Image 1 (cartoon, rainbow, N blue to C red):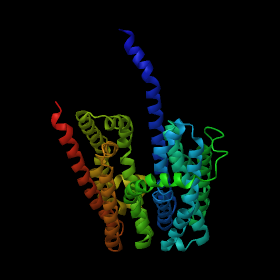
Image 2 (cartoon, rainbow, N blue to C red; image 1 turned 180 degrees about the horizontal axis):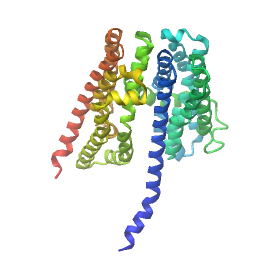
Image 3 (cartoon, one colour; image 1 turned 120 degrees about the vertical axis):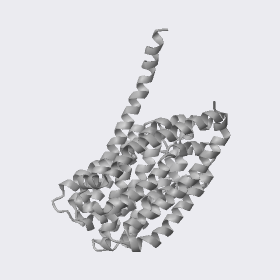
Image 4 (tube, rainbow, N blue to C red; image 1 turned 90 degrees about the vertical axis):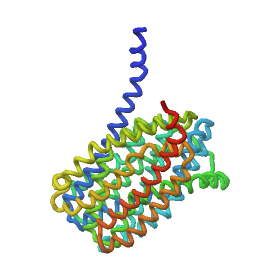
Length: 431
């Protein structure tokens, strides 16, 4: 019997090492993104900073529509195709993603001209830089999904943001002239440096797959991909719109300074959410298994544990930063961004309402609430757009933050109702 603990430890060691690598890479990814924001805020004037935040926000927002949800389709079909050695199908799906992403990426490039400060730069170079960055971001999103499905989570995190910021960050620091045009060149180079390796990783595994297949999938298979992809785009895109749209709408409706304030506030909320994201990462396999089981009591207990872990992980970081927000913003981004403090407090208040449900959304989806979640996200995103149009012209970044707070409160209300339903199904029978 004395051998059992040692055997259990030996068996668990590879899993623990994998978790530590994933957590370390996740922290590195978030840290590089934060450092890039700090460099933009401290080394460029507010107008150029606002322009850069606007462009990077537009690139992030483009992920909600550039591939028409085809990356979500991959998560459903890709693993099955690998198991059946249908490598050609996956290769065809990749080509379809690349073909579909071209036009939306170009549209996003022209949308960058909606910001007055953006039109003052070289318009042709701006459109090209944004379009290329959006296209390469779509490639990285596909690669991240593929690598995660294949069990290579570490590489998926590398392509999710580490490669881009590893080039973008030192490029910004080393620029001799802190101008918008020079920063756009760095953005373009970083997009290429991160996108091309991601493309190589997407096509290189299982060498030789798809060589004899047509360049694009048959029409029937394409329709099958889109049947899953378009609803997924509506659901996931709505959630992404709620998180990214404010910066993009502030560009044409307010000033570059307002964009910079809001971007700084959002970056602080991302930093606060890192411990909760790590906790969610550790709980995700258990949530997926619970959703697949018929054990209603287990589902409720795990949901309760998940929500409690999110409250603790978020609260331990959020409350001190909210109490000393002036000092934190001054230390990290500089005194010129003290106007971002009320924006941060409003946005973070909304984030606190929904943070408790972060990883639990995977359980809700597995239990059949995906349609309810999609409706909630779409209504909240639409409400956010309407409120932005009303509030931003008068209140700037604080108006956008208020719109976000109201929209997140609506989402939290709906999530609470779903959690109550899970409790009625299983929680009442818990010992």
